[in-house]
Length: 566
Image (cartoon, rainbow, N blue to C red):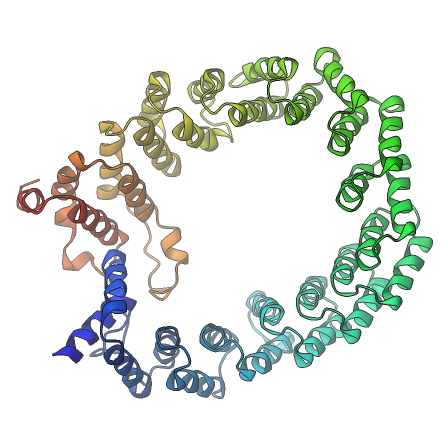
């Protein structure tokens, strides 16, 4: 009897195995979660025994892989689980299956030598012979990334990644290989030399930039890398990439005078990327007087756009700098460009959240929400950013709430509408105007994603709101979506994440008060029929909600609701 109980809990826990048919069965998530919790309290030896038996008897390789992974997590170090996966790796497989098997082994025995050898095999695949080139590149990328996680200090992994740098013409592959080397090859001469050569010879600026960043992480104190960076700065003066080289040079040779000098020079003379150089200097030498002088000079001589940026940057070095503050106080009152006014106000609020000039500026800018000026998208963006700034200062600010309500009433197609609905749900609790605006929007929108979001926000700011409740119930009852379970295993979360039915159930569960739970049970219980179990997320959505109600209602109330006619 005990073995039979353990076997049944095991089937429910992992929601996929039917022993009689050797296939997959979808089990509702609430049941699976409850079974897993029970499994932890069940006789572990019985459960492990059931897993081991299944690993040794199933003829399905995919089942063996998944069961071995689960067994390894339940019983760390289990030899049967590890042996099953290692055996699978020795069987010829396509790239996807091999990758899945390696991932399972990584989950239960991350130090197993078979992992790195098979990841290396995947990175060396001959892509010219693959029919699905997009998928093959994805597999190679995954393998490269995995080497960066499990190959710390492993020379076989390092050599494989270096080989990619030397032989692959695909810049994306080179960039990912460089990144993985930066995770596992600190101080490794082979990796450092390869990245230096890549930096010096590649025709791609992105690849060169990636090599520079990675050298900055792994080449600390390496004289060859220091010399290569110094030479690079001399031969590429004025190029934006010198900013990144100077930062990396400072990282591997702290206090390097050449690196600091290059960054200060870029702040002083560069027309496009001076602010990036200033941000790097703020990281490595925040009290540097030369950069403060360079920024002060820019404020005095530059046009309005640069002057605003330079003042904002200078405040980050010296929050009480009078030149920066005076400049930013003038811009909201004198500039005709709303972008500069908004930027200046935000900068002032970072040092004084109650600065009246900044607050007045933002108040004036949010009036643009819902209007139709000559450049509606940009003006709406500035108005929206101003609203967000006010919200950060005072989440209950009535003017910000009013601006968001105005947006709902007058600009339903605005790209910021989704975020506005979410924000009202976060900080407009009890606001009658917000409740009215969301109720109006829920009646007219034809966008399902927006409909669910509005119902959720409405239920948050007006607990028990009948319109929000009925909207979500009706959506769960009537919405049809393409079921993707035939494409993904039951353990694959991708199709679940995309399910709007499950999203609706989750949103309703979050706002559902106890006094409405009986209505949920009455409305949805008839959808728990066997014909829906394996073919629709509606079954799981209804099951999840009714399970939630059963856990929070008294037994008499649940019994009455369950036996009540709809």
